[in-house]
Amino acid sequence: MSRIAIKSGGPAALPEWRAGFAAAAPGIEVIGWQETGAEQAEYALVWDPEPGRLAAMRNLRCVFGAGAGVDLITADPGFPRGVPLVRMAPPEAAQRMGEYIAWAALHLLRDGQRIARQEAARHWDEFHGRCASDLRVGVMGLGVMGLKAAEMLRGLGFAVSGWSRMRKSVPGMDCFAGDAELDAFLARTDLLVSLLPATEATRGILSAPLLAQLPRGAMLVNAGRGMHQRIDDILATLDSGQLSAAVLDVFETEPLPPDHPAWTHPRLTVTPHLASTPSRPERARFVAAQIARIERGEAPAPLWNPETGY
Ligand code: NDP
Ligand code: OXD
Image (cartoon, rainbow, N blue to C red; front, side, top):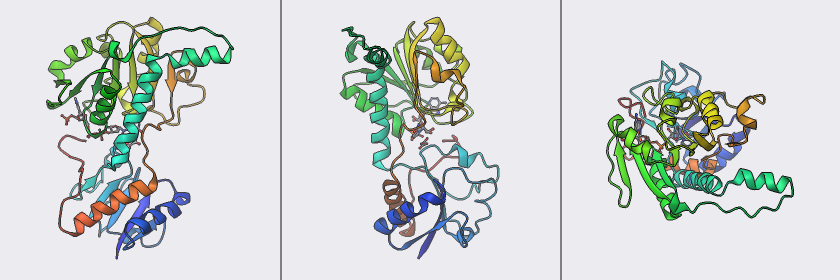
């Protein structure tokens, strides 16, 4: 029997993890992070392990990130580099992200904040806005999440382009690549969607100089990481009208402090890091399938790449 030690959701989440693994792979024993035997487990499923803790697990064969972004795991200077690190990627994760991005894009397109304000004031004003095909969406990051979001946005009729590190070829979509093509990508983007991973190259990328390259009145959605955005720049750019509206799901400090000005900005919609969290049974099924691959001698996927940092 294999053992998996879990640090995700705290002790209260353990019964659900246990039920998920019992259904997906009864041969895997689930051990809480603080329970006896956790240090001896062959597998770990973690969101934010304490520094040094994974390195102390001598039988460790594979680490599973509880999320797609594994930055809180790799931030540990003692992270055991020789052990494979698998990012969380059940099919439901990309689907959920696509749904969130589609919701955010439609919310911005149809001015959901104005609708909510009018409703609160019982004010009947039949305003009319743009159509999806009028809006050029640019997706930064064309990985598991970005490609699915782009596909779903195109299905809704948005004109979508994308930007990634290495060039992609996606039928029906203009694909830009690398720093050299960032300006051209931004210049044709009315709605910028950021689904980048947290790396040193992407830290603070959503700051005033980049936002200034968008057409005036452009809109922004960030569901990548809070470290990508300079929130003061975003608020100032909303005030100046360079950005007309934004939806942010992620923040440098989470939970966002109650007195943070982002909560009350009239053209900013804040969501509490909920863009895509697959259920525990969905994640248990995905991890169980990866463990089965490992135990058959096959490589799990998708693996975090220490060379690129994502
Ligand atoms: P992937 O690793 O699959 O994709 C990352 C994409 O970003 C790739 O297309 C990559 O380019 C591109 N990229 C990376 N660095 C650069 C760079 N310097 N310049 C241009 N492009 C770059 O990640 P996922 O799609 O699975 O997830 C993306 C992020 O979304 C996660 O890291 C996480 O932070 C966030 N996330 C947030 C969630 C939420 O609930 N808010 C839920 C899930 C994920 P290339 O293709 O060339 O390698
Ligand atoms: C993730 C997240 O990376 O939820 O999966 O942020």
